[in-house]
Length: 468
Image (cartoon, rainbow, N blue to C red; front, side):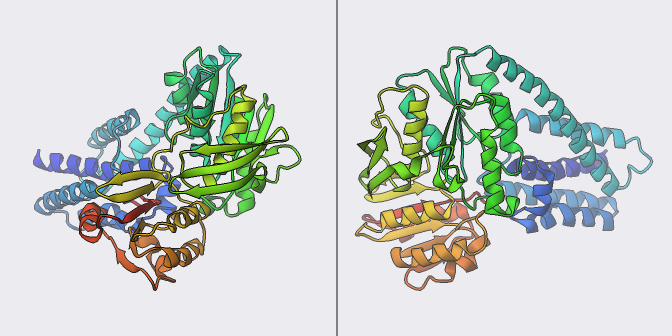
C-alpha cells in the first residue's frame, strides 16, 4: 500500500511540473520541448527523476526518491512568481492522470515505475487534448450564435507586434463615454480566450466590442478574424516580437495582415510598417509635434485636414501613436466627441507611482526594443539617480539586447539584470553604471531597500516571470 501511494504521488508530482510548463506556454507541447527558456528545469524535474526510478528499483530507494522529488518540487513552486492556475482544464488533466494511473495498475508491467509514469502522462495528455477539442467546439458554436443575435454590434479587431493592448484600452476609454462598450480582458488575445469572453462577458445590449488578437503561428489571426468578422481593423507597428516563431519580419507582417480576412471589413487603420498605404489610414503619419515628459504627453494630429492638439496623462512618446490609432478607431465606430481626459495609463506600461520619496516607473509589460528605448530616454531627463531593473528583451532576435545595452550605459546609474538569459549581451556595453545580477527575484524588495534612497527614480523594464 505504501509503495502504491508513493508511486501515485510520484506520478502526480510529475504531472504537476508538466501541466505548469504547458500552461506557461499556452498548452503547446512543441513549445515546451523546443522553446523552453529554462531547459535545465526539464533535466531536474523530468529526466533525472525518471532515470532515478529506473536505476534504483528497491522499495526504500523509490520511496526516498519520491519524498525528495516532492520536496524539490515544493521548493521550486514556492519560488515561482507565476504558479500554475488551477483552471477547469488543469482539473480535467489531473482527473485523466488519475484514470490513466488506475488503468495501468491492472497491466502486467505496472510494477515498472517508468512505464507506469509515462503511460499515465501520455493517457492524460491525449484524452485532455480530445476533451478540450470537444469543449472548444461547443463553446465556439455558442459564441457564434450569440454574435449572430447581435446584428448591430460593431467590432474592432486590434493586432500588432507591440502596443495592441494599449491601443485596445485607449479605444475603450475614448469610446465608452458615448457607446456601450466592451473589450477583451487583460491580455486575452487567442481564439479560445475571445470565445470565452463572448460567452461569459459580452452583454446583449453592447454596441461596440474591441478585440485584441495575438499570434504565434500563421493562421491564428486568420481564425479570429473569420470568426468575429470585424468592421474595423487596427494593425499597429510590425516588429521583431516572436521572431523565433515566425523566422522573419515578412512572416510576422503576413500573420498580422490576416486580420483583414473579415467578411464585414469597412475601415483599416494601420501603422506605416504594415506597408498598407494604398488601402489603409496610416495613423503614425498623422502625428506631429510630440512632447513627452514625466508630467505627461502632448501631440498634434491631422484629422480631416485639420490639425488638432491633444494632451494625455500618459508617459512615453510612443503612446502618441497608440492614441492616434485609438482616436481613428473610435471615430470609425461612430464616436463624435474625442476627449482624452478619460484615457488612463495601462497597468504595467509606463505607470508612474510615487512612494517613499522615490519615483517608480512600472514598464514591466513593455518588451520591445523601440518601446524600451523610448522609456529610457523619457527618464533620462530626471536629475536624480536612475536605477533600472530588467531581464532585457526575451523575444526579439539577435543583437537587440546589445542595442539596449548601448542606450542603458548612457542613462542609468545602477543596472539590475533580473534574468541570466540575456546577461552577457546586456553587459556588453555597460561600463558607466554599477551592474548587479539578481539571480533570485524573491530578493528584489530586499535589494531595492538596501540600494535605493529617497530622490531616486526606479524603472521596472520588461519584467519577466521567473520561468523566463
